[in-house]
Image 1 (tube, rainbow, N blue to C red):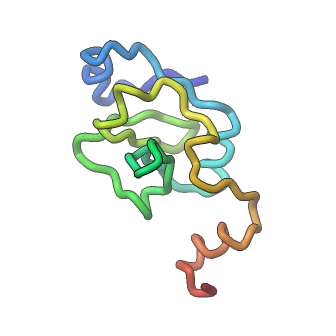
Image 2 (image 1 turned 180 degrees about the horizontal axis):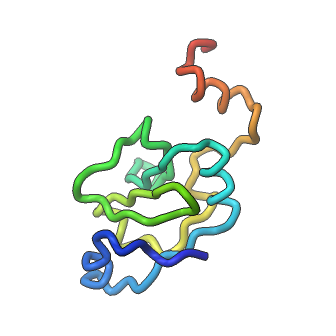
Image 3 (image 1 turned 90 degrees about the horizontal axis):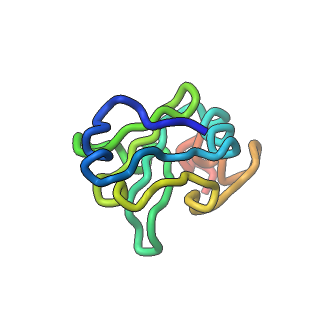
Length: 109
């Protein structure tokens, strides 16, 4: 469980959100991929994606997740108090072909 970072915490305070909890399995997932992630809006609700898919914006809220950063869209920030594996659109294990496609830039597909 991590508390939100000091960066842009005033926006959380204004929204009345005292903290955001990040599940350990999400932190492990992020660390295995060795990249920052961003929570943004999709047609199905909030999603947690690598910043290579959804680059951070200057208006995002930032959280530390282990050694990495999670950026949260200002539009999702007021609703997010728990970051869990359900926010990842597809969950794969290391070595899965989708993970490999992400690493290789979809050359195989």
